[in-house]
Image 1 (cartoon, rainbow, N blue to C red):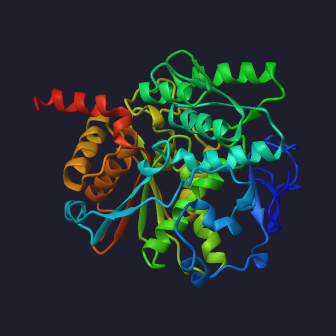
Image 2: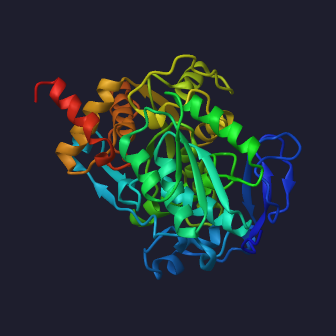
Amino acid sequence: METTDAVAGLECVDCGTVIEATAEAHRCPECDGPLDPRYDYDAIDLDRETLEGRPADSQWRYAELLPFVRETAVTTREGATPLVDCPDLADELGVDRVLLKDEGRNPTGSVRDRGASLAVTAATRSDADDVALPSTGNGGQAAAAYAGRAGLESHAYLPSRSGFTNKAMVNVHGGDMNVVGGRYGDAVGAYEEALAEHDDWYSLRAFETPYRHEGIKTLFYELVEDLEWTVPDAICYPTGIGTGIVGLAKAAREFEELGLIDETPALYAAQASGCAPIADAVADGRDDLDPVERPDTICGELEIPDPPAGSWVLEALRETDGDAVATDDPDILEAAVRVAQTTGLEPTPSAAAAASGAWELADRGAFDGDETVVIVSTGAGNKEADVLRSHLMGQGI
């Protein structure tokens, strides 16, 4: 697999084994741990002036910090999403400034497009014909879209409770959509059975491919540039499987390594209390996760009872002096409506967990009052408008 010159290899997060960057590996050959692309930062010549001179047209403007050259990218101009000032939310949280990073503006309406672009590009570099993944919904839609653009066959395994829009658009993009059981674990099991029967399929499962979190890290690059190279005090990110937290932490380290910033933000993983293995582990001071036996939340994108790289996510929170927070479904739905009514922006319920988490953090006294807080809205509300409308009807509105 051809990579950019600065890629120094794929490093196992668990045991530290480094394999060649050209290897078509998904997991560590020594311990089966997740792999992470590593770079020779001394070989990267990138400064603020160079970036400021480039058009903000897609995440591929940061090609020096990505594993593949831009000319080979499978892209629909994902990224370059707006960072929107929300003064009313700042007043409610009691902080100096709140900005919302609106990932619903991506081509398929979610942050998953960033990782899909990188992972499908890797699949084409590996001469794959088919890609496959289990998904809660948005990832399956994004994979189908990018696979279709690349001329690949895609196979998505989704639980029946995934949103109608996600399931419909997998088919619209030409993907093979398999609805399995009612929960994400059912989809994972069916995906694993299918992959065992088709050893030529290329996996796009998060943390099985080394490249999905690698796409999400570009979100951090963008927001720091939008803030004119100042670093926010806190970033609240809705967290299910954990690619966002891992990607943001890596991006902050990289910009600091390159001298583009001189501090890093605190990262906050926001979960739904009906499925909060990461928040529970943080609260208990544990280094590993305990799987949630009976997950139950309306936030389907966050209903990941046993994140496969949980210890990596916990490490990212610790190294950024961050935290994790879980809030109840009614509070999350109310936060989605509140964001929509005060800012004009439209988060899905799962995305609104970040806003609900920020309110909870404020209530806990986590903020002093002079902070800049970024809330990441990972998906467009019109994907689950029925859920939000039902919430309003339940209130008699």
